[in-house]
Image 1: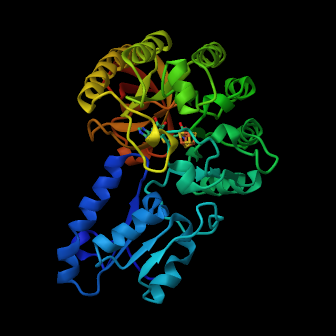
Image 2: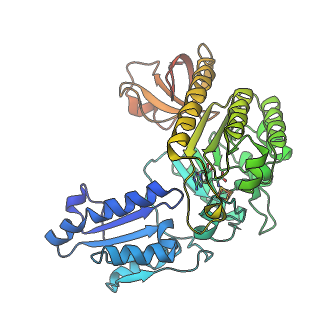
Length: 412
Ligand code: SAH
Ligand code: SF4
């Protein structure tokens, strides 16, 4: 449409907020950030403000946003993205939200941050209805893209120089259930595409993660040796209340199998602390599970009540303060486990896809290992410019470990 990315929000004629609905603090931040735009609108009469994303898929929240901030031009649901240009041309105002389950436009032009990395959505929506989660309500029923479209997209990105891919879906393990394809088959088809590249995927759901999938990863050359497998809780009682569809024992067996089969596996997880009804004994089972499985890292969240979900109606007796204490205990335990896991790489050589300048130090280069760890490294040939290495693979000897990355030196 002739728009370009503004160098600064103050110079923008159009501001679009993309919002998240998963936890309450994201919701609160949107209200704070949008409120702060009022004076910009007063200064620039031509400024248009649009709010989109999952928050706006909740009709009551969308209406509330428009009512609280009348200066917003348009509140537009995630699935209305393909009508954005027409709405802008017509100077439309108001709230335009479709059904959460509507088809998502395939051909929207994209701008990617990196020339070398690309995210590829393989499925949309979720049918799982974990009792705490808003996603099925705002993203609609699970639907998968055809494998042929995904593979074409990946090959096109590869031709453009992309070498690191992230396949995205709320539950990638159930990819293809709606169109007769399967996630393992998709990975196998991708693995035989010519060239050197690396494919990550998220998120896997333990209830649909099969041994066949684990074997596929183990036998592949291009699929990342990383499994992000959110456990949420180590207590069977809480897992049941969460409607997760697996037990602690099944989860442990799956992880042990993956560790045996996939050499160099990096295993990460998500955990929720303070789910309604959780008691300290349940929480201790989560801590014990973490000690047993030694996750390389964990994304940890304090339970956030999402109106409209089943868990929002569950009685919750534990105070926020108490939940905060448990949360810090969990962080301490994971921090020690994560540090020890990264230190194990010191002295080892890892294959890294280099995609950018160093994150810890701009003299270094940065990339991801074949098990999806961040690696910052010094290039071997000091005469060559950093830029010449970006977009290429390198072998790196790990010399030290930070909390979130490995540090090393390239070896030729
Ligand atoms: N589909 C993925 C991820 C969903 S959202 C999965 O099933 O694992 C990412 C993470 O946010 C979840 O794994 C969960 O740990 C967390 N989360 C989701 N809803 C939450 C809530 N109401 N409160 C706190 N954490 C939540
Ligand atoms: Fe939410 Fe993930 Fe459960 Fe789906 S599988 S309901 S996205 S937590």
